[in-house]
Image 1: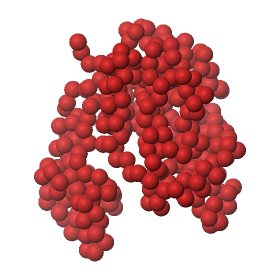
Image 2: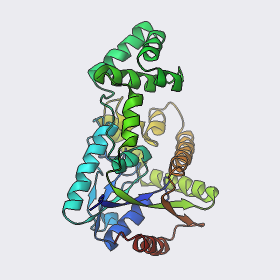
Image 3: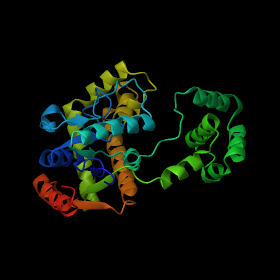
Image 4: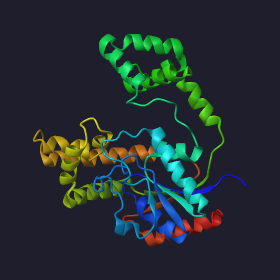
Amino acid sequence: MGQPKILCVVGPTACGKTTLGILLAKKFSGEVVGVDSMQIYRGMAIGTAAPSEAEMDGVPHHMVGVADPGEQWSAARFVQAADDCIQDILKRNKLPVLAGGTGLYLDAIVAGRAFAPGSSGGAVRRALERELEERGMEPLLEELARVDPESAGRLHPADVKRILRALEVYRETGQTISRHNRVSREMPGKYDPLYIGLAFRDREDMRTLIDRRVDAMMAAGLPEEVRALAAAAPGDATALQAIGYKELLPALEGRTSLEAAVEEIKLRSRQYAKRQLTWLRRNPAIHWIYWEKERNFAWALQIATEIITAQGLQ
């Protein structure tokens, strides 16, 4: 029978993935699975550009607004939950339409790749963080060089997060993260994906749209949303690290101006879009649709429909 077919709508932030995903799901009897590490949290609809009930237009959505903002969702937990949604959609003979900008999660879902055990809130990680605080980085670097020389040679000595992660995996499993990743890459993919990519032909047009979107988010009440989130979630919550929230908090606390915070959000959003494009360019299977000055979704739907039909997805 082969692997189950899924449709993936990808692209940088503000390019219209959500809208095209909904249009394609309506046309091809599909349901949308959000692949966005921040849209999973409730109470963040404005800052994460999560679709409203009206925008969903009757299309079932999964993995949007499903978590409390105080929860810490690891990549492994996200991928498992999203995969459960995809399996359920397939069982009902519907088309899973994956739409979102978190490339690492999307690649892991498509490949059926399991993340190495361990999480930032686990006992092993806490022990490593205590050791780092008490003894400094040098003993941890020496341990990594001894147990996982491949990771030690690849990671920069200042990359604390990945060094702790590599040691965490080894201490929990007795296997190196290098070996785990190599075995994962060699596994056959779980799904047969068709990728539709959205991007602006001129990067300047993308930057202009991102700036406009940030202004629209501010007008829609982003400061109030950030204030409510900060009151509801602990200070170290992953949700508060999202672009828009992290930058606005100092302004709301009077430590910087609102104008400066808005400029910072625009800058961080543009930088994020650039990183997303760099990640996606590595995938030669993406069928790109390029916007000119503005986004024309009727035209994009027509082009995407032709691609989907030609590829035999329907």
